[in-house]
Image (cartoon, rainbow, N blue to C red):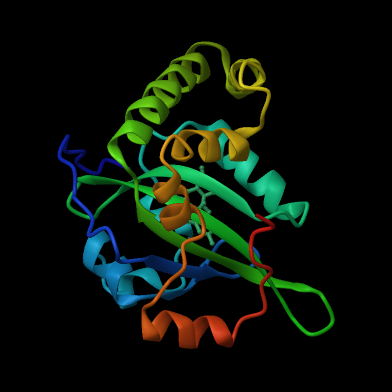
Length: 201
Ligand SMILES: Cc1cc2nc3c(=O)[nH]c(=O)nc-3n(C[C@H](O)[C@H](O)[C@H](O)COP(=O)(O)O)c2cc1C
């Protein structure tokens, strides 16, 4: 807290992927180089810390509640997140979350892959998040949750489906961003050592 917030965006390289892995409690256990490069924290500063070290105050609480509720149900989740860099700047990412299991099927942690967010998606999500934030500050997270549910009902979908809908305005984008097929050798090698289900779609 008390960190300076700057209204300045960090522009991400489109084909690079920001990766992290946490233990079941959300404590960071791994970050790739691009994660550090973008957020400005070193591995020493990140490893062992709670993942909210890069939480941006513009993010509504309800979005993280939905994220954790889904992860705990064993579902993979896809969320658009605004993150806070060490120097107070921000960056938007589309994040795919996966659950990592041991051989016996116990949850050993979570894994997240992030990519840049196209502008048209950012505009719509930012508007929704701003509304949720205002509702949270005036009426609390539960009321914000109701608002979110009604909002998504208009599209007859859930948060995940809504993100897909937004990206789906452009067929190529949906391929590129939602599947998040990564080509980075280091990431692939790391993922090989993990046990996680790919998103159903
Ligand atoms: C694998 C994984 C990656 C996460 N990545 C982020 C992230 O990039 N930014 C973020 O704000 N929260 C991320 N979270 C969620 C945080 O754990 C936390 O719930 C969130 O920052 C809200 O903080 P709070 O619960 O202290 O309010 C991640 C969680 C997991 C399990």
